[in-house]
Length: 474
Ligand SMILES: [Zn+2]
Image (cartoon, rainbow, N blue to C red; front, side, top):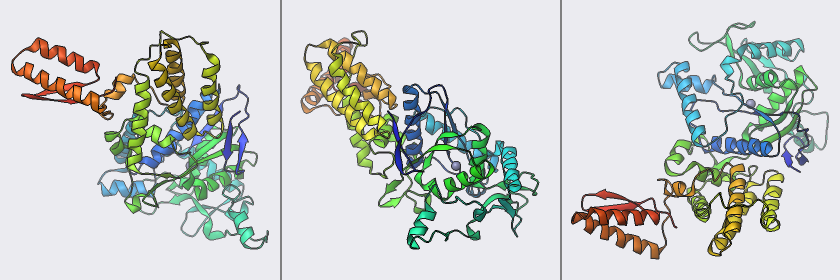
């Protein structure tokens, strides 16, 4: 049975829901003020896997991921580019979608933009007013009153920490009025984007947007709420406080948080100028390599980003694809040597059921691939193909092994250096072909070109000397 670590209870808990009910998943999306970085890629790859795995288990899911398309940072970035926020936001969303498409992320079922949910946000704030949790401050902003909500700090355990620090003095709260947060920001500059509300022109605060969107799509509660660990406090604490304040029975069963990406001992952040953009990585690495790399660290642990480790992932993935080069889907038998095959299956699914232990699951893919490589050399073709099919099936659950091995290995981002012996043969053949070309013996040159192709080598003709590239082992 699947167990998931729940940030709310700080325990691994059984994921026990009826297969007849839809699993509601809400993940805080991107604030579109800049291009997506590896931190975004990590978080959304993790939730992509979670959705895929739940669907594999037989659950139907409803996945909502919002887009924050209004924010101080967005207004600042648009002004800097001398663009209207509308034009800027459209462009950034398009670029974000390109990145996500390349990363092979499944589309969410709904991707609401905050600016399209303004009425829902206003109604939510009105409910908070009705329940006496909202007030207008001296700047005409609308704020949430933390002291009126008794369970504030429940999710991030801020109150408990405070109690421990104060020798278990339960009556003390570490929060005061200065921690109250904005629900609706009053317009200051006439030129700023704004919407009309009962409290005058303005725009929503950040935290309220997620609560209002969750309330709009998931009236009956949420099974999984996710995001990066940096959102736990105050963003998720505030989201929960708002939702519980309008409906105390509102339930978010599992809170799942993805660890940070660390670069040179620092959290990756734009202010530290150490961001690694998704599109820069995609220029050098196949999306499956990025995915494999991300999944090789457990989602709750910090991911220490070191680029050479991406190369290591690339080599591992290449080896896995190489082991599948002779796979023939017409030579399989679903029951063949099932006992042996089940040992890999059992290991793979027990890793996934243990709080999505993808590093372990990736290791099992490697082990299975190594086993298949050994079988390839024996005469048990049926076992080779049946195990290869299993390997592809497990890989697909992780969003991997979606390509034909030959095309994957020959793609520009995935050159595999051939072994020395093969390399010598290839070099000799290429040079021999050059001589035939120089002597206009086109037929012979073509025969060698085809031979090279069989070895997984393509040649590019440049005047007298050709170059070869995109090599894979055969
Ligand atoms: Zn959120």
